[in-house]
Amino acid sequence: MRQKRRNCLIFALAAAMVVGTAFTALAEDTKIDKVKLSVSYDREPKSGDDIGKVYVKTDSSQFRVDYAEYTNDADTWSVGDEPTIKVELSARDGYRFAYTSKSHFDVSGSGAEFDKAKKYDDNYMEVTITLKRIGGKLSDGHRHDVRAPDYDDWSTPSELGHAGLN
Image (cartoon, rainbow, N blue to C red; front, side, top):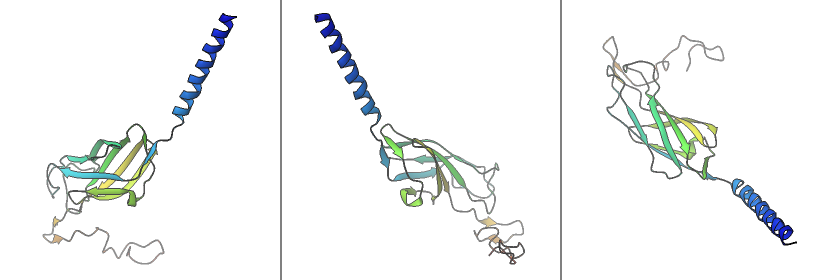
């Protein structure tokens, strides 16, 4: 009789542990409401310079910056280039990424601006950041005015079939 009672007690304790573990696993992670990132570089991107290194940091305890790099294809900067940075973020235990809209991002330093974010799952996100377009002198000696190269394109048809992209 005692053996049967003991076995029932062991079974009840084991069942309670399983149920308790299930509730812990169902606990919801806290949403990361604001992603604050600070950008710096080893040297400011300038026409003719080699593409250097970029650094992205956060002081958040909710996520970490895993990786940051320029995504431009060339080995050197040219007039009109817009330096683009890919940043990989991971949520820390107990937190999750919930938003990708601009209002949930605060990017500062080196003239950096938020471009877009893509969430792969609740714990991993890629953020794209852009820096100011590179100005300087064009090959004909005129100064580039830092506008998009197609800003004054009046020969390419628009989506509506009109002359020019503007």
